[in-house]
Amino acid sequence: MDYPIWNLSMGGGVLIAIVAITHVWVSHFAIGGGLAIAMVETLSVRRRDPALRNLAKRASLMLILISTVFGAISGVGIWVTIGLVQPAATSALIHNYVWGWAAEWGFFILEVVTALLYYATWDKVRPRTHLLIIWLYFFAAYMSLVIIQGIISFMLTPGRWVETHSFWDGIFNPTYFPGLLMRTGICLLLAGAYMIFAAMREPDGDARARLVRLMAGFQVAGALVAYGGYRWWEHALPESVRVIFLGASPIVAALAKTRTLVLWSLALFLLFALFAYLAPRVQRWPVALLALLAAFTFFGASERVREGIRKPFVIRDFMFSNGVLVSEIADLNQRGILAKATWAARESDGSQVSMGRAVYRAECQACHTLDGYLSLRKLVAPADADTLDTILSVMRAEGDEYASGKYMENGHVATQKLDYPHMPPLVGTPQEIQALKAYLLSLQKPQAVEVTHAQ
Image 1 (spheres, rainbow, N blue to C red):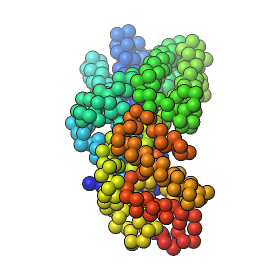
Image 2 (cartoon, rainbow, N blue to C red):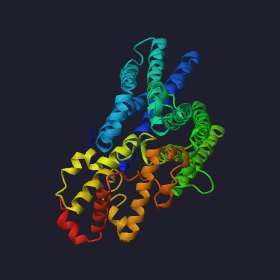
Image 3 (cartoon, one colour):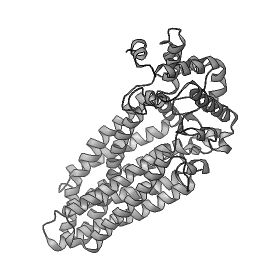
Image 4 (cartoon, one colour):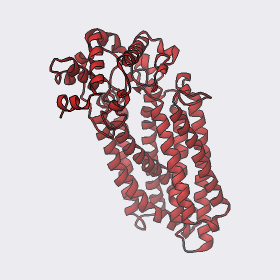
């Protein structure tokens, strides 16, 4: 079954990035914050320290609001956006990992219930019972990460799953454990970055210094663990992926620059964290805010790198960003892309330009818009017929590389001839490709486009 493309002028990928990165910022705090609060209250019970207890109590409200309200709503938002922008990939993830998702949703329900119960039972149950609730919350939250990390990392490095289609081969893929280590560090550093604000609200000066140093310790430990996980993750990537953003001459320079931002923002965060740890009495909220922004930058940029190096796939070596499967290229070259994308074919009135527009919608619209994000009109504006012939021929040749399996060894040699080297290959019959060329040339005639394609 094929699915229509949801067309947004801002680009569907941009919308997913906005919703997803916002969600992971708060969801990783929900995990790390649970651990930090559990450890703080455990110490308060053992040491009979009211300052530690008050810190846990102050931070618990923020934990509830972020994890059970904003985290839950933004999590639903991810499902809505990916279902509209990448329906084929969403369907594949659900069908292959339905029991994984079921387990994760079970853990999330436990997470929400224990979070609400923890906040509602302050001073109403025995201290050890209260501790059991928060540790149970952390267990449920971390188990959600354990499962979701497997599915997220699978999309970049499916490993043996491409041949076996085994649930466990997909989950425990080459970048699973490195990514889990990095995300565990991120949970810790975000917990410290958030909760240090609650620590600074302690009225007693000596107690405030102790609490600030404790939260700064979470930041330092988290930064070091995250750095180790990130380096391990880079090392675990296949060489065909590493060349995209690593080395002296990376294929995509923008991703190489984003990687530089990842490392420098983490280094800056570690510097702020060390300052708070070594001089807790002089820690002030502007410095804590800068540390939090550096943490957000590191995490957001690392997510951008992870998503960017997956192109031209949405599930690497299996499904391209436009929903075309690697396994069906040869068949679609015989039957035509419009035999698959019947929703696009229905819009064709039989003319060559109209057929070309249907091909564009089926193969290109997942990433390109006409006049917005990655505007196709701007891209083809300077191109003449011969240039388009060259580009389309290269993209078609790349399809043959994928169909034959040579791309596994050659690392996208064909598309390196293009200015943007990670577009999916062009598939379809020669007639469809010529129709696409006619449509692209028609975009250079604004008046004609307005009449022909008004919506």
